[in-house]
Length: 117
Image 1: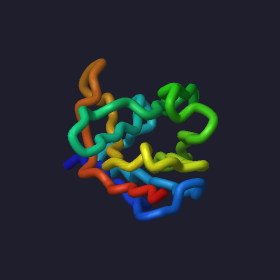
Image 2: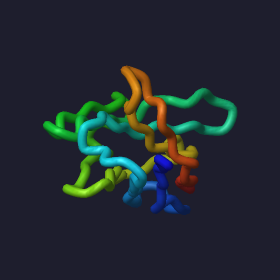
Image 3: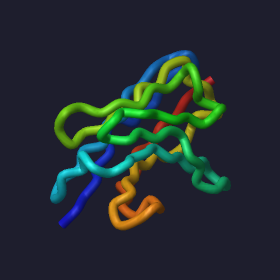
Image 4: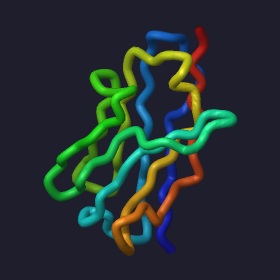
């Protein structure tokens, strides 16, 4: 059973920081590209950042460049370091993996991030 579990969300004041974690189980995710997405109330889910597990190449949405950093360890955990948080970063954050094809087909349950002004 493949599972992705996010953690690390919470309430933080604007300008603060949080680090999200995504732990994968049931399969070795070293081969697969992974990413973070978020969905704010009343909005569609949007891309935040992605990382290729093997080379560590990263990409970011323009809205988070310079503030967020995606990384992974040598095991099955991916991180999203979020600095200089803004109220507009408030959303449920999801991690996802491309396992079966070119689309993200495995998703976590999400973790809430709330940034107060």
